[in-house]
Amino acid sequence: MLDLSDLATVKRLLSKNDFKFSKSLGQNFLVNPSVCPRMAQAAFESGGGEGVIEIGAGIGVLSRELAKLFKKVVSFEVDKALLPVLSETLADFKNIEIINSDVMKADLCSLIAERFEDMDVCVCANLPYYITSPIIMHLLESRLPLKSLTVMVQKEAADRLCAEVGSRSAGAVTVAVNYYASAKKLFGVSRHSFVPSPKVDSSVIQLAIRDEPPVFVDDEKKFFRLVRAAFCQRRKTAANSISAGLSLQKDKVEEALEKVGFDLNIRAEKFSLDDFSAVYKNLEY
Ligand code: SAM
Image (cartoon, rainbow, N blue to C red; front, top):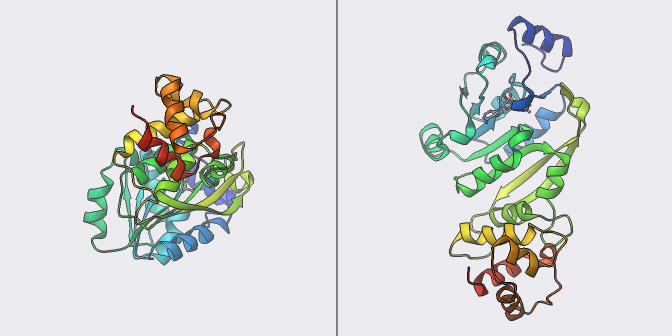
């Protein structure tokens, strides 16, 4: 089997297939031999160990490790140019299916029902950096029957995604992730673990999907409009930011905040998920 952590082997394989790296597709392939087995093992332990969806197979370095542990791997890869490479690198594995399409356009709910039937399913991926948050939010908001997401993202994105709600590093995405899942950082990955090497370091994070969100809101889309508005002007007070973000009179917002018992100088970064839900229930918009 080809050694995909050997740079010369990878270069030979790619040049044989006339492959050119696409920056716009976030193509930085892992060549550090210790990272993929660790990621796959973490996904296996948290995800039920039966079915796994990978996003962005690349040359198949993580796909192979997943196939060694899981019963079935379904791996998306949008770049057609990688298909001949994958046929070669994954030739020994009968439990991997490659789907050549954009994961954001796929009907994942039907795919899970058709391909995995009664299996427990999780996601494990070294995500293309240009759409990290949209992919994570798409997976969470679609309420797919997934146990966990074990994903590699840029270190700064990991810090935001795994921040504590109510802390200075929290943002709208932190609140959204916490609503659907409990997030933790697993380990850091240096930029030198990839070819080509990106300009930033990465982290592997794990989101364990909750059975139920910790707060009840009757309209999630509307709730998250409030959350985004609250963070749209981070340096301002929550009242200012929410009134600007939702185009509401400031005194209306202040009234809602006072009803919940907040000081009017509070900033959104101090809000817990319960606080957001209380403001949501007391504000008409
Ligand atoms: N898993 C491989 C690894 O760890 O070396 C490749 C990871 S690379 C960071 C991301 C991969 O995602 C690339 O192969 C890229 O072509 C693919 N990709 C980018 N956008 C995608 C999309 N919207 N849907 C599916 N795959 C995508």
